[in-house]
Image (cartoon, rainbow, N blue to C red):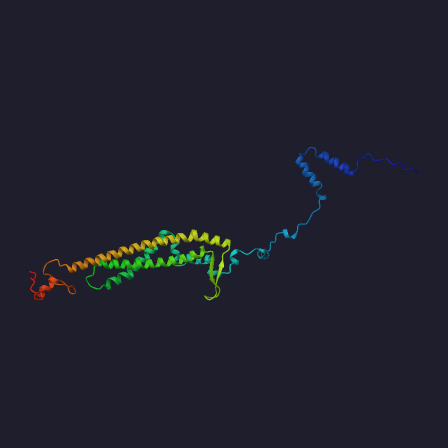
Length: 277
């Protein structure tokens, strides 16, 4: 029996599907057609799994272990001998923190320190430790004020030496340190990051403090000079009043030689010179 092959008039399933899809996409915009076509053929693109090296690890311990160390951790200098640690300790210690604070507060603290010492220490010593009972009150007060100025000057000098030491270590390119004692001193050359940080801190934080302390020392030195001049003038005026009598025939003051008073007591000792009337 012979079989006759008759081709079907219907298009294949894939052809009809594509043609129907094409007719359904005619009303869409070109951009939306591209998105739909990508969605239709997306299953044909193989999916490549991402490598493990690009995956984000959420474990804190593993992430911290892979983090490169900071420049400070590579420094062999002990923590208490590092310049930045010394700066932090100095800026928070007494009385070095006064110089880095507010200017008005800094001046008020120095004034209170000097006035307290002059009032409670200098004035009692000058008042009860005078040589003679006839000492001038102004001289005693000037002595007490001078003692207060000297104490403040010593405090400012101590602050200046501390800040100058830390500033030199911050601005220097090398750091001298001791590992266990004075007999094993070492020198460490700062890295570029540490040197830039230390010099920035020394230029903008330590140098202004040193300038303030320098001007304070100049002012205190001028105050001491003025007090010394006043004391010398007062003592010179008192000696002049002792040597020059105000009225003729006054008796000599004990402990001070005067020709007129000597002639009044021993006229024969002057070889016939006329005695004062």
